[in-house]
Length: 90
Image 1 (cartoon, helix red, strand yellow):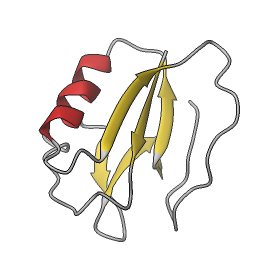
Image 2: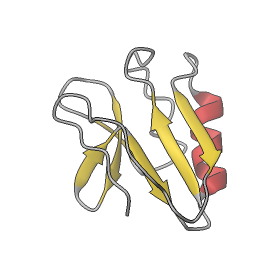
Image 3: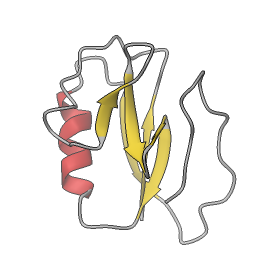
Image 4: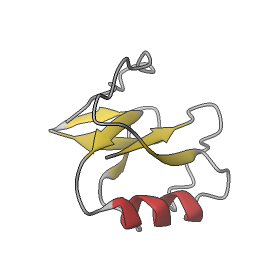
């Protein structure tokens, strides 16, 4: 399992991530978000084989606003969502 987190303070809407991983989208504030189950999030936990896509998106971000990290089976507590962007655990 791995977690993708977007640092909303660091994101400036460059969107280099969008072409590396189609889970990244532009939200209503013009910043990057993660699309999960027809919602957008600033953090999401995944258990799939797309970690490489997420890491490529993080590496492409010139502002280092995207973080990808391993997580344990129990995802635990989540941070508060930013504005209209939700944090989800699919």
